[in-house]
Length: 385
Image (cartoon, rainbow, N blue to C red; front, side, top):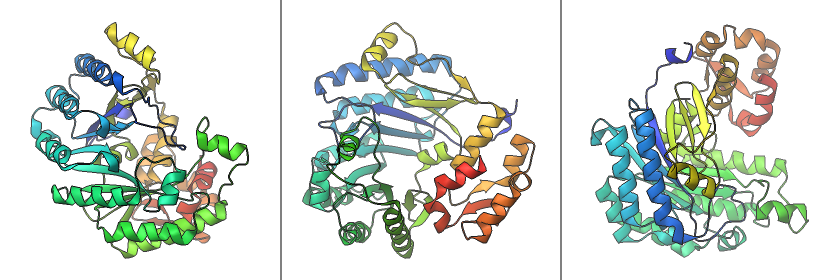
């Protein structure tokens, strides 16, 4: 089989915890605001894990990521149960899990919780700061303010978490460029190991989408977004961060190993409503419906539709899309091996044009996008697919 030839260096587990205390205007991830469902959700995720362990007994994880939703609003005891279930079912020993990440909101951070997390073996925190500008935070419907952001980071450092990431959002309507860059500089000065930088996007069904469609607010132009992103990249690289993926910057050795599993098309299992999985060349996604999820898991079945087996063509397309997000780029020999044809030959004129215009470069057998290329990555992918 074509897919079995690929070397799987790492595998990961993702757990989706779909409860938030409130909903942000831009978020389209599956979540609920009913905290009273927490215990039932956790119990059924534990049951799903047990069912999956019977079906995939050879799966061995090196990373675990708890996202949502807001994992940090779940009780420590429930988080511990979930971690123990993964260790028991998907590791040959507890030491197999090299990276365990939990997403936290700044207003959930306290020293007791952080110490509890460390005792559980959690060694990486992804902190949803989004901005150090209070006006931007209010616009985004975040529950915390800039003071709470700083307090949370201080507590992370005090608790001994050296591997933590800060999420930032740019292109917020009404926010001056200078205000965003002040937030970015504040983040850099705090010396996190990792910064994720996202352009605010309007997703269907969100409050942000409604506000834009009704004309209440106006989105920043694509040109302005590109200018901001380019300048942010320059500042982060000057501060010693490596842009190892389109939206992710890390100090040396602090790249998110779990997310690299996604981008390198390695294997992962997802648990909880709406979680996705990719295993043995097939992918599937759990139903993004709490009632349906509850009903199916309670009947001792896995809560997803039939798996999709990736064809060689589909695999090649995804390899292209994901690899070009990485600074290491697309391994052209790997692409040739999977598809049976050379991308350099098949898209010769397009690639020559990209290189000529400073959007891409060919080095060490790989095609990589330059900073300018990353700014128009979606357009480049359309041309290459």
